[in-house]
Length: 522
Image 1 (tube, helix red, strand yellow):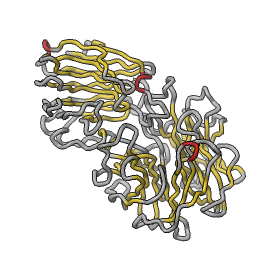
Image 2 (tube, rainbow, N blue to C red):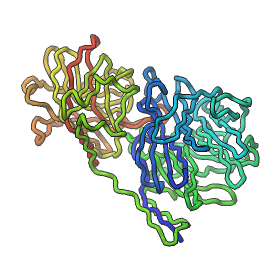
Image 3 (cartoon, rainbow, N blue to C red):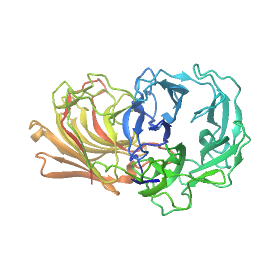
């Protein structure tokens, strides 16, 4: 019999790059990169590869990772998830931090262990457990055009290297041979990597051998790329993971971008799913044929006694967060670099509100900025909240933001300037000084119980608005979406949207109280 999967790509919308997935029995698990955001490495569960539910974060404690001094797009790169002998492993790189390490757990929802360091390699380490008991680390080494893959054996309990690293794969002469995965399928070892950089020339390549150290016979063309399909809606495809289902069919999870402007897409790199076809012992996906689309219907053999039809659940059009001391924030809420102190982010200080107390750091400063956010999931969307805020010192500010990085964001909020309260819309673009798009005096309505703030996005621009009654909205400013779209060569995240507060350099900060936060797809 057969099973037919009806699903849309991406299967994870928004900033969920570098997917790594495994199957354990009838359950599938998936992790993605998080860079400077905390908690790090979301982990998802699925029963069918198309419907995914987040069950936790792998890096949930500051004893595991310290991101305070990481710049935007530094931090946690390309996690790889593996399972062996009752234990889950997640291996990754803390760029400009502790380097390459892995953590373990008996339950994928956590808790996960503190880091176990490994000694060699650049970025993107991967684990492979061979059937003879040996455990291999395959990891990128070199820079750009000199990138290659080195490999060595480790003790999986201590991370100690048991052999010296050797070069095993040099790719297809393209730059950034990275994201290596070693597999053993039907007695054959496969080395699969990305190549070409995570932009227009991105591709997935593969080699095979009868030995885990190679030499690997390189397939003469990519198994996955859209770099020759300039009008295809999915671009920059690569950084892939092979996974088999319960019926023995093969699939691939990979990243891609739905381009919207010359800079890329505000959603960043997202997670896509496609079937794998085996041709002469090679796994083939889409070498510029255009097989992988936004709407997919895939029929494959099934062990079921009747035909199965698996459909992806509809994406919710609204995500409404009503703040309460009786319910913690859901797992899709994250922070910039660190978990703020309890007195900086509170659900109990004022019942029915999320209360933020800022510090000396602004959205531009990085460090332990008080910014509570979630990923933007749609190109056309709107976020809205009500802010009750009475700052007393010049420089105090609170509001909502659409943030790509410390150097690229839009924000609208209340700010104290020259002893007066104002509604202000700001833009930070390309590491320049923060630019005030517009400002109006707000003294006349500072004590009326709060002001409503909204950020609305289309494919072309963001608009920043406010309202005193929730009915009549006044657009304060608008700016092109390209101002906060990630350039594939320099920024590896996508846009997040959320609430922020900051005080003065003297740490003075009045509490900012946010009522219901609503995210709506348009």
